[in-house]
Amino acid sequence: MKVASYDIVFQEIPGEVTLALNLSGCPCHCKGCHSPHLWEDTGEELDEALLDSLTGTYKGLITCVAFMGGDQAPEEVARLAAHAVNQQSAISNQQPPLKAAWYSGRMKMPAADGPFDYVKIGPYREELGGLKSEKTNQRLYKRIGSSWEDITSSFWH
Image (tube, rainbow, N blue to C red; front, side, top):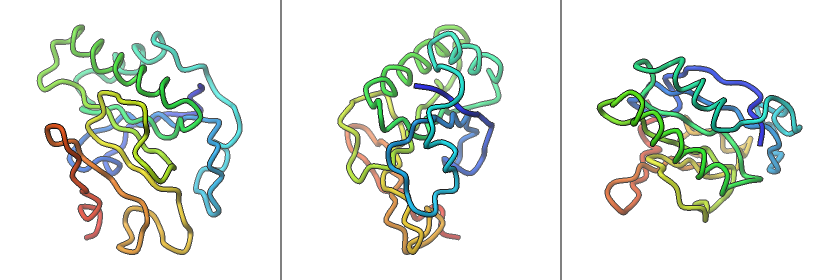
């Protein structure tokens, strides 16, 4: 799995300062995709060392790391998310701990269990729009205890 780009963003996860990792090799190929360059297998191999470097660079600034894509390797996304959360917490004693999010283009919650605090599911459908559209088929869920709460409406303002 490769990371094609990354950025610090404020709008992907409500209330979080997020390190968004744009993963390449997306198998979904949604019509109207805003990032069709991520369909190709390009970028730098995402492993523990690169992840540690990125989260370490932004230590104290970010509250969440988001894996944007990765549908071709859900178990790897879950493993790396667990590593990021555990490693960052151990290194920095960060309070509160770093959160993890996954933006998946699939229609169902990913089967791979992971340390995710947030999961977005649903392919982009041009006629329905993204999370900011009240017509969207995409959903953003927040883990509350052992269940998931749909917080998609937090984008509708």
